[in-house]
Image (cartoon, rainbow, N blue to C red; front, side, top):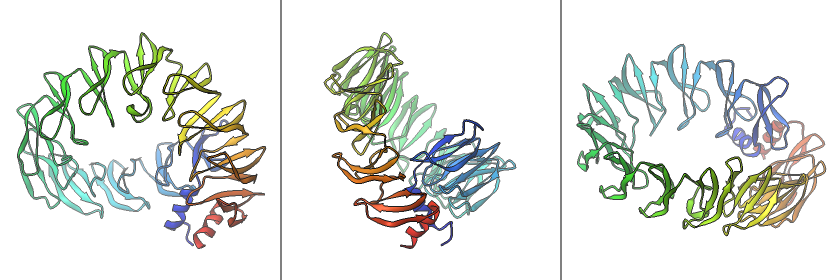
Length: 468
């Protein structure tokens, strides 16, 4: 089986999780596996985390992309490379831009003066000061003739000609006339347009759905758009109704609501416009991804406390900025003087540890007196701190270490596979990578060897799994 086989790369990515590592002696970067074993040598001046089985790396001024076996997918040929979007990457060589795909194949030669990322299967390109579009086969579907252009979205692109903006389709047909001072891409069926210094929104027929009366606007997302009126900010819906009144000096949008500010004081407003937390704090920061799940960290007089989802203060503002706080999902971790205190929703301390990791599959690794265990999202200790090492849960199982040997536990703490392996990876699709006596193999959740531990390299082991 060829090394670059797609299935091979998929399996390599799935069963080998890599973390960036820096060699203290040479100061260069490489990658280690979850057991701390070096997999990709520290040969690079800079490395980025793996995303979709590839990582961007740099040597000197040149950049490349590697797969998890360390093989170059995009070689060190280019002066500048971007990040993959829709499977394509902008690259620059000798002052000109082009595109490569996720196999490293150059689909658009480096001949353009500028380029934007792919969106909806098309990308903006610039040649001699004019803009056009290429598709994902590399074909120039819209000639470079426009003064400026926004990305295609929902089948249309905003473009500028002779000082005015209009909209075209992928065949370069004019769909909406060139009469706007500025135009943004369509989002949720509406596009922001500017006339005589004011912003409003049109639909795909060119109807002015929301009048041009705002000083600034953002595109619609989840049925709402931020707008500025008379120097104040709020949100409108697609009919133009104000969901959140234009009365705030600043708005910081979150998925479940919005941080707001008036006269330097901060609060929180939900997406229905209800002011859940009044503007009376120096700052308000959601703990976790969802304010209504756990609440927020608030600051008063340079001290920090915690409010719950109703705005009630459950932890008094008594902690300093250096006492870092994070969220487990249903509880909060306060790191004070190198001790991690887990605080429940009622403001009471649930537990105390030397280290608390992020929650994965509802469980978080915790460390106490150099031993590892697990707590749930509420901070309740499920697995006592008795292991010498532990990986986070994956597929309902976690690798744990006793002495120098690794085994597996389930979420109740039962040891389902005894600690007998030299290294053990994360479970995916019911199997995990193992190492025993310097040989690699795969086991299932019962401990049965799916691929026996007889292969000298991880690559050979993956090949065996591909052929199984």
